[in-house]
Image (cartoon, rainbow, N blue to C red):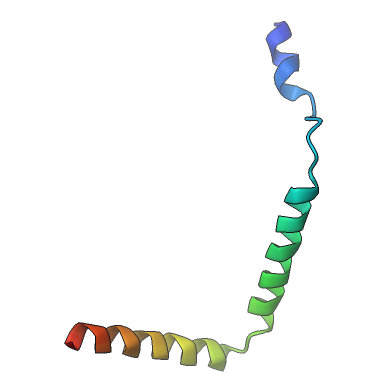
Length: 57
């Protein structure tokens, strides 16, 4: 039964790297949220055209 406590103890590792990665993730999410629907649809359309151009070669 003593094995259980080993897994539930909080780690003593430095979490600053995780926080940095999370803040980068939050920034990306904000950018995505602020992107207008028209811009997204335009980008998707352009990507599809690029793929079709590559296939036709």
